[in-house]
Length: 258
Length: 102
Image (cartoon, rainbow over all chains, first blue to last red; front, side):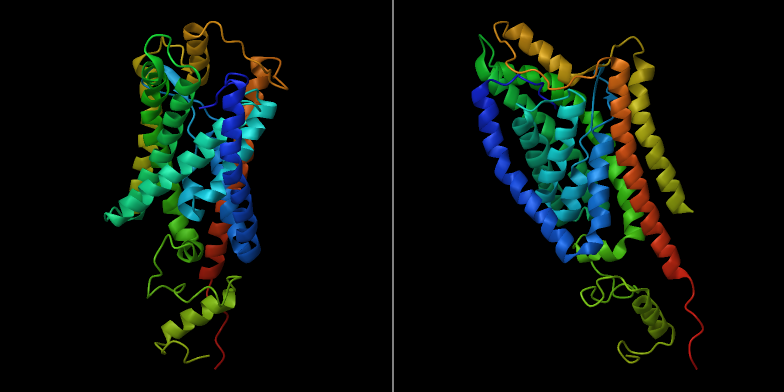
């Protein structure tokens, strides 16, 4: 999904940069706010950024005989809502544009728009829709991750078709060509990314339950020791947990010991 | 036990998904879609001249794959660190509480 440096005409380059900039600035604010108000989120924010970093570094073969890389932006979109990924995704793209000659500075706006804005929002919408329809957390995560990946590549194809319409068939013909390169190759990769997301969430639901409950990804289980509102214990004090467990072990009503 | 089985099956599915193309069609070049798109532009729009060059290009493909590996290593390292800390935290929480006061 990296449009190569210089391959968008100046008008498009400037236009996409202007279009993406407010999302990235807003995303940066969201990240700062999240870290300031919920320092315990820093770990998971790091995980979301790291996941995008790994996945976008790896080119995977597809049945079409070409290779492409996943985006990994769905994870952060599901956990922290899409704005956060506008910043994290753009950081990844900047790293690749500066050090790897992958993508570019003039195409950073367009690439950020597809990977850091459209992808996360489309993935988040798919996640919410799947959960609303009763697909459960893991079903939602699978849909969110896969759609975020695929939507990114569809956007890139349309951006390229707009900038380089076909001489005879115009935008539609060019879109069909670029979609043929990007979207078809991407389908198995999107499925793989969805499966990776499910794997990761299976680990997180066990080990990061308090965070997931606070972020609204998991509903607090009434019988779980973490069910108490974390607002009162933001630092996840171990004493609180033990207190809860003791309260349960002795079958005392909640708050009886306190 | 069932949990581990599901995890193993998921991992196998991911591996199979990306190993199958390699097994089915060993002769393919697996060119990146990004460069295919660039080639497509040059073919359909031969008059187009890229108007900006990358500020820095890795000199050789070896250096380039090294830098990609570095990117993956950074991401993988941080991800492993976070998962390790979360796992360790949970283990610590499950350690029995010190003997309750009478």
